[in-house]
Length: 311
Image (cartoon, rainbow, N blue to C red; front, top):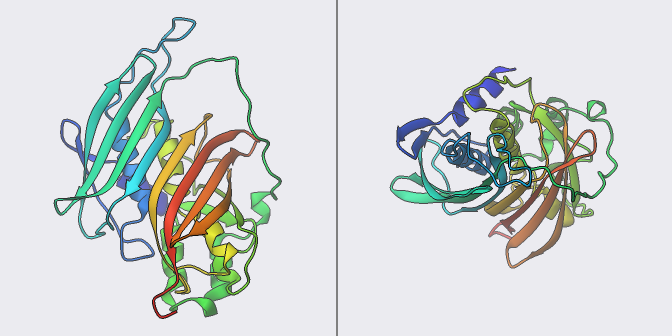
């Protein structure tokens, strides 16, 4: 585990303030606001900390399952986060059911809500009905260039020489590898609105850390899910993104469904595409597969994607 991953885990380890109220630290991202994936992951940690580990469930077998974990989340990004101020997360215990538990979380900075999340938790349940889409073809992640190898190749396209360093710092905790060239590498060349990345944490996670697994794995995948999902929108129009300054964008809303157990410290394939963009908004959809072919999560996000005003 490298220092960047330890720092990320510290960021997710929220401070309890009062019952159902937590405080999280924030930090600058590659843009001058808090990274949306950080806020989403912290909010999910806050929600998970209020879910009883021994919550019973109504199974056909009549047995109680293990600790409930998130099976879905739905969130809205309301205001840009200030990286220089802590974030307060207030959890509302909407429902503790026999099979499902629901939590609502509001993230507040400077007295105003910046983020809203609703998450539903479900204890493990054995069921006979199961199917999934097959995993798409993708090369071995170890055959692909690392961020440290790829980012310097395109330095001449960036807004400033510091961009590559900021990108590397922002992704230092995550080993993220593009299957094809990222948007900033093919500016001016519209492509199919589809993108694939492999990712895992930079180092193995502890099983006895402050945030229990598998909640930690789900929160880390939530964190990563906001990094590249709108790439496919950019690819369709030959745009490079904030790094080259040819778009203005921000996440608007984010939804995830967790289908099967996953480990954030093992390779996961993030298969992403954009079915549409219009009116200054672009939609990205993603499927996350474990290396053994299991579909572990689905993601949908809409974001603001606009040309700069000078255009």
